[in-house]
View 1 (cartoon, helix red, strand yellow):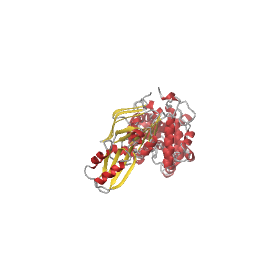
View 2 (cartoon, chains in turn green, cyan):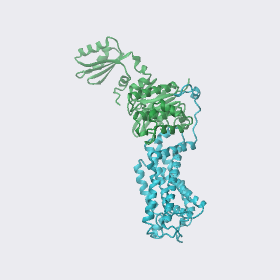
View 3 (cartoon, chains in turn yellow, cyan):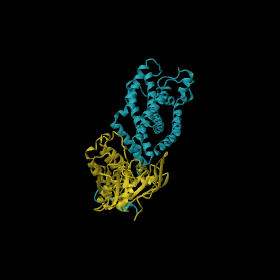
View 4 (spheres, one colour):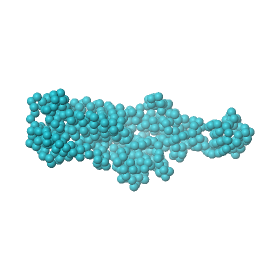
Length: 310
Length: 286
């Protein structure tokens, strides 16, 4: 029906000789929560800052709500909300003062008292910013992003530094604003956050898009299984190939190091048996053999051959 | 179709019409940011030390330490003569206040936060200028009251008196650009302190602010009398009737101090404003 909320094509950004974003293309649908997932240094924040108009694309195009965020910044800014990763408030200011201040710079701000209460900042309105907990600072940051009634909010690592309770509250809040038709674009390096919250996930690694889809698409709808096999001494040469031929062509086998292997693919009652028979035949002793539904973590591992170390 | 007519209800229920979102005016934005700077002062009143305790201490120290050995041919003597100089110095130091405030804002990401809002990028600078002028005005009031206590009086008329204060504020305006320039160029508050102390102290002392220039060696006297701060000081003293008769061989700016000061304000602003804005834009674009 309408154009995408965010449209990035062929974006390249380079700092010195470090290529932060390397030909990235992706879309964000209106009214969705879209997670940009990737390890630290993958180019998430740079991409977001380009969408927010802080940086000019060195190559490629970026359109946000149909506008060029750099050249049409004045038209775009009233329609978006931005939650910065850190800072943006001076230490002595009280939480409510800061929110009122930001509200006063918008033409039609939301009622700050209501917003404040909804975000569970109720009893810290008079607390100086520097004495707010990490989670409270994040929630205040979110309130500042929402106070101008944006159509689209960019949130950078929304739950960094939050305790589990505060994370859940924040997730509920983001779901609630999606329910109100607001598009949410968030960056995260937490798999569980993306899996729980996002309608659409874009996995970024080294400045490139390596996978896109809903959490269910990416994990193959739960029909796929993941087996982690760790053995007591190094695998013989050619082990992944021989294991793959034992399990069938639809299975993917990735050797993680000389004593562990990741097996993903369709699973049935006989799969574990096949793996243990293969071990017996090749004279390796399983130290652990775990079976689970494929998670985003496994998807990332399969795509990059690396753990998502954060 | 745009999102505007989708009837967003952001958090509030039931359904709210989403008003057409427009930008607020530059004036409103600037006032808002100036107010924010004043709240900052309210939370940290020690920020006002530079325009309260410090000038008062300067007035008292200079008035009583130097006052006994420097003879000035005016009614109230050195004390009354001194006050114009101290005020000129304090107003010149407003560059310091602006630079420190701006560097701190840049450093803490507050300028970045402002840039994510639908406001004119000039509002940050205009707002800071407004609060800085108010800050300087507080200093002028405090020093005037201190002056009254130690025998300083304005001996002319209301118009000249007001013109004296206006010239001081005009000078404060020109200094804002110096502050924005230095504040945008320096990476830390410490660097700003270092640069400003190393330049502003010699500039404000190498003048007629605290001692008459008549007895200085010729080369020093020339520098001091052409120093813009001397024009400002001399102008204020003349307008308030605190000046002593000028030597016939005084430098040209001191012969016409009000005009010279106005020219300086225009020249400094004309050169430094574009430079300051360019440096600020460059800093925030990175």
